Length: 365
Image (spheres, rainbow, N blue to C red):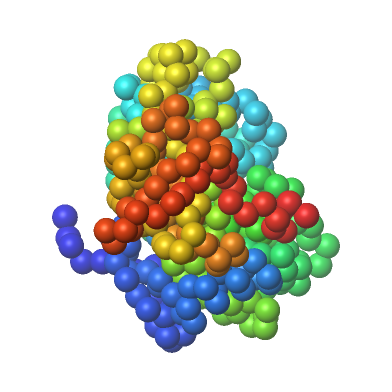
């Protein structure tokens, strides 16, 4: 396997905008343009555009597609029986540990579109392929597909201006077709920021033109991975590799709502139900701290004893304080519980809170 970093179709656009490029999940990606706080605030106040072309896109076709994915995914696929509907879900191994978290769209008759994390691209496709019956067709469309997110209170009005006359935005967690500045696209009313907005799928050849069209609106700012992380953390949205991985089950990760108790028969179901029945020994919680910035891997303490580690941590530009997620013993998971975080050899007071950390956004209005 080559160690050379891959580049999205928008790499030249990022360089032209002066972005600081960094390695991420095997890709050379923009971490920031003007600055993380400025970009973060632009999304909360107006609109920001993100290159998420590093994500993986798979399609599943065939008469057995529903039964196949119903067995592999934890959420109940029958809830998105209507064409165009989308669902957040998990894919587990036999021991009930999380292989990946995904978005699945009912994109056509006997057809589903799956969006997977870039870091798990090869693992996910191998797992899907290994369990695929002969009656379905599984296709990796990642190389020919670009994904652009437009998020923020003004995002939908911008998409409407770009779209052909008469186009209506899809409802939340729904996908529809569109011509955006004459470019064919699929527009999903989904996102990873807590703001209203869309994620747009188009061909890699069309992506630069669409990117420039979106940025032609004065209220839109280009946004890098840095602000994408602070935005999602303020909402308590989990990040694979930090908040969950192949050593964590959904119940401990606070994702029991994606694993309905009424659904059985999916891979990992028996292991999950054992944890649900007995209760998890550790839980992922939110914590806030004043006067310091928590980071992944820092020790979490209770009365001087280490009881856990920070999973995700950062400075919240909206709250102007440190926020984090951390795995702690279940008995210390109640909101209001006093903890400490070890930051650069200093012990900083922290308190358990229930995410989201930020509750007022364009989605909550």
